[in-house]
Image 1 (tube, rainbow, N blue to C red):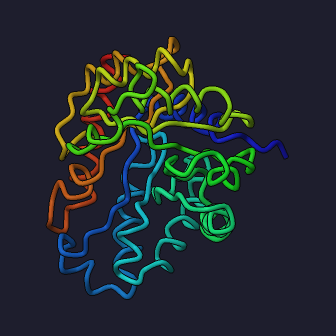
Image 2: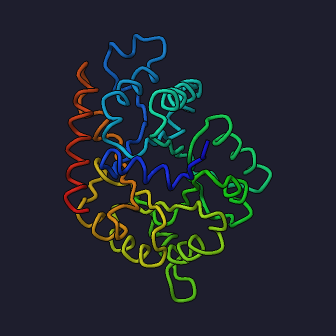
Length: 273
């Protein structure tokens, strides 16, 4: 059986669902309906309902690992990913973990992401350099999505420092498109709240995949993201939204409301492709 690379999986899901939308599975139990909280596995129950109502609208799902660690719910993260693998294997899973540590520790983090959780991609922090990312990059068929310019307000404090007359985030983009991408499995995180940076980075990296947070609750506008970030074929983006979809309703109709919010966002994105 032919094993698809992460980029090929995303391209396939994008085409099949006509979607650049990535839904973040960030479970906040304080926002769950009472009926879900009464379940034996409330986080898994919530995630499964969201997945079943949105799997035809997305190019990927992105669980943020902190939401599971904080609730001692790693087992429910495993259950969620296993459910996706069994029922919707064409939808890739990005583990949003933002790992970055020395080589021996990074090796364990890579095993966690790709062997324990069976994620198709993971987010990593490049601050420690190439050797800290190599354990992830050496998984040729897995995606390694490197933080480049994040969506938070404080991103400028570090990422917009000048290095040899260019911004640090531009240097990261250059390395990501060349020396770090020796297995052609690199992607970048670029916040939708900085569309000008997105335009600069796309010019540097060519058709490398970009994960774009900042849409929805953080208020990033769709048109400049797609206009500045898409590749010539109208792809190359995974536009992520979490809270605005997951918690479109706090009542028993949460899954239906999530579908409506996801459908509106997917279709808005497609207007500019």
